[in-house]
Length: 84
Figure (cartoon, rainbow, N blue to C red):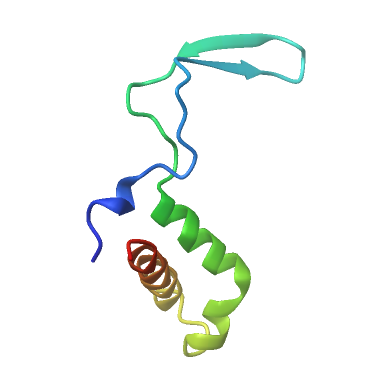
């Protein structure tokens, strides 16, 4: 398991305020919590694997517990390769 790199944010930000806009045209402004970065790079890679259709080819039938494990295992392999 890859420890240090898996917690890197996929889309880091240096913003200190978050502006939310609503359909009626109104908006609110909120402070962004320190260290907020959204999803991790590992989560992003796992999501990309899921959307690629690969899990259906390499997991046995429709066993829903296998699919997330496969996606994160693949994401870990991508992160490991990226460290080389």
